[in-house]
Image (cartoon, rainbow, N blue to C red; front, side):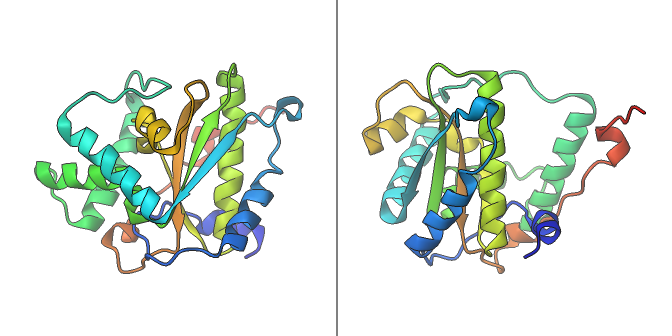
Length: 220
């Protein structure tokens, strides 16, 4: 796809076909994403890609932890809540998603089940876990976000669906245990990816964007 079409058609995919991607294709999109800009070209990110049965086992472990009621302990705390216009946008997004899945506002169990699907990367055959190495902070996290966007656009340009997920960062100790990682680098986010299942109801959800005037101020 051309660049404009890639940006305009990329969206969050929450239902995947079980077919794995070709390893060469995976390396291709990650190589392309590595060209993302960063402050002083320090490239402050490291990614772990987990696939197949290992990803399913990881998802099962995180799902069981969530069901246990034990509080999540993300490396980067999720503090505060959305208010004002940002809260309105969040509500609009939730309405679109739950509406597509046929989950009513008062269907608490349906909403819980929908959330738990996050922890299994929506059944995707692959997931990328993005880490911010020590001792980096907010400035470098912005660079990591640019890398994540580059990665998802590279995927979209090749017909690969993806979804950026904060939920995949909720239980970093489980990921460290499953992958044999040392504590230190902070798990910031995960990205589920694979081929979209067009029949999955969640993929019928569509969200809008705020008018440009609400997001950008031009100074002559």
